[in-house]
Amino acid sequence: MPLVTSTEMFKKAYEGGYAIGAFNVNNMEIIQGITEAAKEVNAPLILQVSAGARKYAKHVYLMKLVEAALEDTNLPICLHLDHGEDFEICKACIDGGFTSVMIDGSKYSFEENIRLTKQVVDYAHSKGVVVEGELGRLAGIEDNINVSDKDAAFTDPDQVQEFVERTGVDSLAIAIGTSHGAYKFKGEPKLRFDILEEVQKRLPGFPIVLHGASSVIPEFVEDINKYGGEMSGAKGVPEDMLRKAASMAVCKINIDSDLRLAMTAAIRKHFALNPGDFDPRKYLGPAREAIKQLVKHKLIHVLGCAGKADEILSSKD
Image (cartoon, rainbow, N blue to C red; front, top):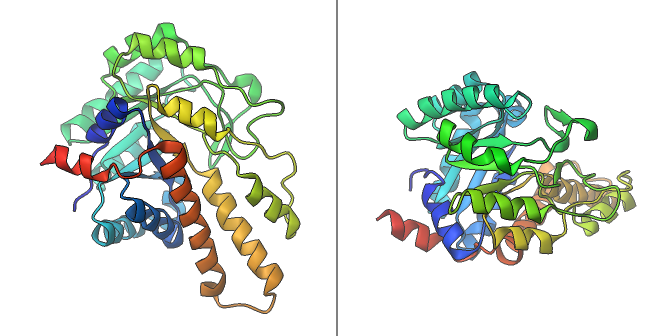
């Protein structure tokens, strides 16, 4: 089973009122946990790689791990570059076998964002690769992305149609109140569904992407704090809000922090209960299982894409 683009995934997701999970990967255990969960519930997947992950694990290692996942699961899997900063990294990933890239020009002016995004789109489409653009800026910290609250900005619905038409992007990430990292809200969580509704009106049938959408599962935070960590005040996006977004125009929901929390909580707990262990398999095994159970929960109860792999595969026949 070769890698696929997200085109058919998003088409079916939009029609079916569900979203595809886009899970960030950094190493073997994370990839195994995600893909084993998806295999058990027969869900399509987007595995995404940030610039930081690509630097940490190296492009060739990640490609081989994803190849192994394809062989092991026989699922429709799209390999996506998350938050590409410039044309060069997008080109490197396109040339290196990715089937989807994101070019994040949100820090630039509207016109410069259009220029850069179109440059990536033109090259990607010539190679059969799809492109995600971004309008609006999410606050928070993730890898090399660091945006303060004062520099964050909601997406302006008045700009979305022009942006999509002039760039030719295949999907669009918008800012409606989510943020990167594990500290998403100081007060009561709130998403601007009015912006999402207006964007959906302006771009009927067009796939929208939600970044910064981890729920920061309280049980993981509690275990981290219980077993020597310090994450007081961590708060994420309530899962009912994500489910509502998935029933609308949001076809791709990014999840990274929840994976990190699941892995960290499992490892901290293991060492606290088994301080003499030094075999990495003893603590990475439970960490992988924690990721697997988290992802299964997300696929079934939040994203709604469990059982949808076959309809993606049949639409490609």
